[in-house]
Picture 1 (tube, one colour):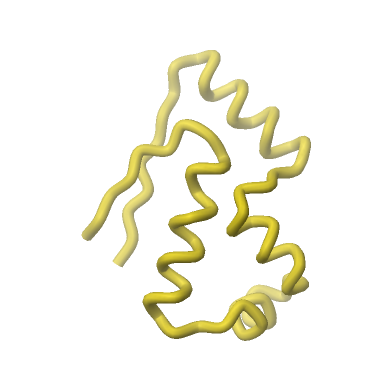
Picture 2 (cartoon, helix red, strand yellow):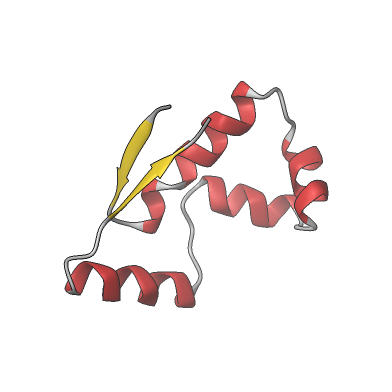
Length: 72
């Protein structure tokens, strides 16, 4: 199971895209499954974050909290 250290929200976007592509899912299909717009999914894959997500990661970084993403 691959693992990736995550320090900023933008670190997650490429992982989302790579996993989606490895499963041969189109953006439209995944967005529909998640009840998101395709544009929102595109923003996620590009690492664009909302104010809430930005503040969350700033808080985690300030406290020295890091996370690791694992996926199957």
